[in-house]
Length: 224
Image 1: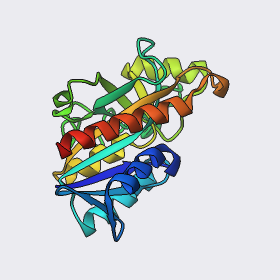
Image 2: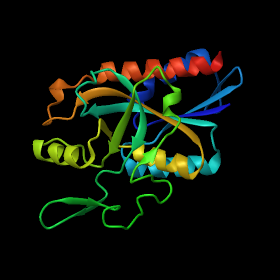
Image 3: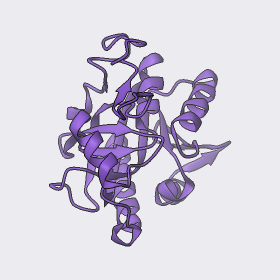
Image 4: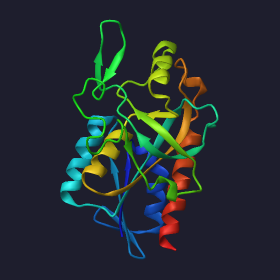
Protein backbone atom coordinates (compact mmCIF):
# COMPACT_ATOMS: atom_id res chain seq x y z
CA UNK A 1 0.00 0.00 0.00
CA UNK A 2 1.34 3.42 -0.97
CA UNK A 3 0.60 6.08 1.62
CA UNK A 4 1.25 9.81 1.21
CA UNK A 5 1.24 12.14 4.22
CA UNK A 6 0.82 15.80 3.29
CA UNK A 7 1.60 18.74 5.59
CA UNK A 8 2.04 22.46 5.04
CA UNK A 9 5.11 22.92 7.25
CA UNK A 10 7.94 20.70 8.56
CA UNK A 11 7.05 21.31 12.22
CA UNK A 12 3.46 20.10 11.74
CA UNK A 13 4.73 16.68 10.68
CA UNK A 14 8.04 16.42 12.61
CA UNK A 15 6.88 13.83 15.21
CA UNK A 16 5.52 11.56 12.46
CA UNK A 17 8.80 11.82 10.54
CA UNK A 18 10.74 10.90 13.68
CA UNK A 19 8.49 7.85 14.11
CA UNK A 20 8.96 6.78 10.48
CA UNK A 21 12.74 7.18 10.69
CA UNK A 22 12.80 5.07 13.85
CA UNK A 23 10.29 2.34 12.99
CA UNK A 24 10.46 2.02 9.18
CA UNK A 25 13.24 1.29 6.72
CA UNK A 26 14.23 4.41 4.77
CA UNK A 27 14.67 3.88 1.03
CA UNK A 28 15.24 6.83 -1.33
CA UNK A 29 12.83 9.21 0.38
CA UNK A 30 10.35 6.47 1.25
CA UNK A 31 9.71 4.61 4.50
CA UNK A 32 8.83 0.93 4.11
CA UNK A 33 7.50 -1.67 6.54
CA UNK A 34 5.25 -4.75 6.21
CA UNK A 35 4.09 -3.84 2.72
CA UNK A 36 3.34 -0.20 3.63
CA UNK A 37 5.27 2.39 1.62
CA UNK A 38 5.09 5.86 3.20
CA UNK A 39 6.10 9.20 1.80
CA UNK A 40 5.89 12.62 3.47
CA UNK A 41 5.27 15.71 1.33
CA UNK A 42 5.74 19.17 2.84
CA UNK A 43 3.97 21.57 0.49
CA UNK A 44 4.45 25.00 2.01
CA UNK A 45 1.68 27.13 3.48
CA UNK A 46 -1.48 27.96 1.57
CA UNK A 47 -3.75 26.81 -1.21
CA UNK A 48 -1.46 27.70 -4.11
CA UNK A 49 1.62 25.92 -2.73
CA UNK A 50 -0.46 22.87 -1.83
CA UNK A 51 -2.07 22.67 -5.28
CA UNK A 52 1.28 23.01 -7.05
CA UNK A 53 3.12 20.44 -4.95
CA UNK A 54 0.29 17.91 -5.15
CA UNK A 55 0.01 18.38 -8.91
CA UNK A 56 3.73 17.70 -9.29
CA UNK A 57 3.61 14.74 -6.89
CA UNK A 58 0.59 13.12 -8.56
CA UNK A 59 2.33 13.33 -11.94
CA UNK A 60 5.15 11.23 -10.52
CA UNK A 61 3.06 8.65 -8.66
CA UNK A 62 -0.46 8.25 -7.32
CA UNK A 63 -0.76 6.96 -3.74
CA UNK A 64 -3.42 4.51 -2.61
CA UNK A 65 -4.27 6.90 0.24
CA UNK A 66 -3.31 10.53 0.84
CA UNK A 67 -3.58 11.96 4.36
CA UNK A 68 -3.40 15.70 5.00
CA UNK A 69 -2.40 16.51 8.58
CA UNK A 70 -2.06 19.85 10.31
CA UNK A 71 -3.54 22.34 12.72
CA UNK A 72 -6.68 24.45 12.42
CA UNK A 73 -8.61 27.23 14.07
CA UNK A 74 -12.03 26.41 15.48
CA UNK A 75 -15.25 28.38 15.17
CA UNK A 76 -17.12 25.64 17.03
CA UNK A 77 -16.58 26.22 20.76
CA UNK A 78 -17.60 22.64 21.50
CA UNK A 79 -14.17 21.71 20.17
CA UNK A 80 -11.33 21.97 22.66
CA UNK A 81 -7.74 22.95 21.99
CA UNK A 82 -5.88 19.78 21.05
CA UNK A 83 -8.98 17.96 19.79
CA UNK A 84 -8.32 15.99 16.61
CA UNK A 85 -11.03 15.97 13.94
CA UNK A 86 -11.52 14.49 10.50
CA UNK A 87 -12.79 16.88 7.83
CA UNK A 88 -15.82 15.72 5.90
CA UNK A 89 -16.36 18.92 3.89
CA UNK A 90 -14.10 21.67 2.54
CA UNK A 91 -14.93 24.96 0.87
CA UNK A 92 -12.90 27.73 -0.78
CA UNK A 93 -14.16 30.55 1.43
CA UNK A 94 -12.46 33.64 0.02
CA UNK A 95 -12.31 32.91 -3.72
CA UNK A 96 -14.65 35.37 -5.37
CA UNK A 97 -15.55 39.06 -5.45
CA UNK A 98 -16.36 41.76 -2.94
CA UNK A 99 -19.43 43.76 -3.95
CA UNK A 100 -19.70 47.55 -3.62
CA UNK A 101 -21.71 47.13 -0.41
CA UNK A 102 -18.92 45.01 1.13
CA UNK A 103 -20.73 41.67 0.79
CA UNK A 104 -18.64 38.74 -0.43
CA UNK A 105 -19.84 36.54 -3.28
CA UNK A 106 -17.93 33.35 -4.03
CA UNK A 107 -17.44 31.89 -7.49
CA UNK A 108 -20.53 29.72 -7.10
CA UNK A 109 -22.67 32.73 -6.15
CA UNK A 110 -21.65 34.59 -9.31
CA UNK A 111 -21.97 31.40 -11.39
CA UNK A 112 -18.40 31.19 -12.62
CA UNK A 113 -18.32 27.65 -11.25
CA UNK A 114 -21.48 25.57 -10.95
CA UNK A 115 -22.35 24.62 -7.38
CA UNK A 116 -22.54 20.99 -8.47
CA UNK A 117 -19.79 21.04 -11.07
CA UNK A 118 -17.32 18.25 -10.26
CA UNK A 119 -15.75 18.02 -7.73
CA UNK A 120 -18.21 20.34 -5.95
CA UNK A 121 -21.47 19.35 -4.30
CA UNK A 122 -23.60 22.36 -3.47
CA UNK A 123 -20.48 24.50 -3.40
CA UNK A 124 -18.40 22.22 -1.19
CA UNK A 125 -15.99 19.35 -1.78
CA UNK A 126 -16.87 16.31 0.29
CA UNK A 127 -15.16 13.22 1.58
CA UNK A 128 -17.90 10.65 1.93
CA UNK A 129 -15.50 8.20 3.60
CA UNK A 130 -14.58 10.47 6.52
CA UNK A 131 -17.10 8.67 8.74
CA UNK A 132 -15.10 5.45 8.27
CA UNK A 133 -12.81 6.83 10.98
CA UNK A 134 -15.45 6.65 13.67
CA UNK A 135 -13.04 7.33 16.53
CA UNK A 136 -12.70 10.95 15.33
CA UNK A 137 -15.45 13.60 15.20
CA UNK A 138 -16.24 14.87 11.70
CA UNK A 139 -16.33 18.60 10.95
CA UNK A 140 -17.12 21.03 8.16
CA UNK A 141 -14.15 23.21 7.23
CA UNK A 142 -13.39 26.27 5.16
CA UNK A 143 -10.04 27.02 3.55
CA UNK A 144 -8.81 30.59 3.30
CA UNK A 145 -5.87 32.58 1.97
CA UNK A 146 -6.37 35.12 4.76
CA UNK A 147 -6.93 33.77 8.26
CA UNK A 148 -9.86 35.60 9.80
CA UNK A 149 -8.67 37.70 12.73
CA UNK A 150 -11.15 40.56 13.19
CA UNK A 151 -14.60 40.36 14.73
CA UNK A 152 -16.19 41.77 11.58
CA UNK A 153 -14.65 39.21 9.22
CA UNK A 154 -15.33 36.36 11.65
CA UNK A 155 -19.01 37.25 11.93
CA UNK A 156 -19.30 37.65 8.17
CA UNK A 157 -17.82 34.22 7.44
CA UNK A 158 -19.91 32.56 10.16
CA UNK A 159 -23.09 34.07 8.75
CA UNK A 160 -22.30 32.97 5.20
CA UNK A 161 -20.89 29.47 5.72
CA UNK A 162 -21.36 28.35 9.37
CA UNK A 163 -17.98 26.54 9.43
CA UNK A 164 -16.69 24.55 12.38
CA UNK A 165 -13.00 25.05 11.58
CA UNK A 166 -10.76 26.91 9.14
CA UNK A 167 -7.37 26.15 7.63
CA UNK A 168 -5.23 27.29 4.71
CA UNK A 169 -4.70 24.14 2.61
CA UNK A 170 -7.53 21.62 2.93
CA UNK A 171 -9.74 22.63 0.01
CA UNK A 172 -6.79 22.43 -2.42
CA UNK A 173 -5.96 18.98 -1.02
CA UNK A 174 -9.59 17.83 -1.43
CA UNK A 175 -9.73 19.28 -4.95
CA UNK A 176 -6.52 17.58 -6.13
CA UNK A 177 -7.43 14.19 -4.66
CA UNK A 178 -10.94 14.28 -6.12
CA UNK A 179 -9.66 15.25 -9.55
CA UNK A 180 -7.16 12.37 -9.51
CA UNK A 181 -9.65 9.89 -7.99
CA UNK A 182 -7.39 9.25 -5.01
CA UNK A 183 -8.69 8.05 -1.64
CA UNK A 184 -7.95 10.73 0.92
CA UNK A 185 -8.31 11.85 4.51
CA UNK A 186 -7.79 15.20 6.21
CA UNK A 187 -7.17 15.26 9.94
CA UNK A 188 -6.63 18.46 11.90
CA UNK A 189 -6.00 19.33 15.52
CA UNK A 190 -7.37 22.51 17.05
CA UNK A 191 -4.58 24.96 17.87
CA UNK A 192 -6.73 28.02 18.53
CA UNK A 193 -10.20 29.49 18.34
CA UNK A 194 -11.10 31.83 15.50
CA UNK A 195 -11.46 35.08 17.42
CA UNK A 196 -9.93 38.56 17.28
CA UNK A 197 -6.32 37.54 16.75
CA UNK A 198 -4.42 36.77 19.96
CA UNK A 199 -1.64 34.21 19.62
CA UNK A 200 -1.23 34.07 23.41
CA UNK A 201 -4.39 31.94 23.41
CA UNK A 202 -2.99 29.40 20.95
CA UNK A 203 -1.53 25.99 21.84
CA UNK A 204 0.43 24.86 18.80
CA UNK A 205 2.63 22.31 20.63
CA UNK A 206 -0.42 20.45 21.95
CA UNK A 207 -2.17 20.50 18.56
CA UNK A 208 0.91 19.24 16.74
CA UNK A 209 1.45 16.44 19.25
CA UNK A 210 -2.16 15.32 19.08
CA UNK A 211 -2.49 15.27 15.29
CA UNK A 212 0.80 13.39 14.93
CA UNK A 213 -0.15 10.87 17.62
CA UNK A 214 -3.39 10.25 15.71
CA UNK A 215 -1.54 9.90 12.41
CA UNK A 216 0.73 7.30 13.95
CA UNK A 217 -2.30 5.50 15.38
CA UNK A 218 -3.89 5.34 11.92
CA UNK A 219 -0.64 4.12 10.39
CA UNK A 220 -0.22 1.41 13.02
CA UNK A 221 -3.78 0.23 12.39
CA UNK A 222 -2.89 -0.21 8.71
CA UNK A 223 0.20 -2.21 9.67
CA UNK A 224 -1.73 -4.64 11.88
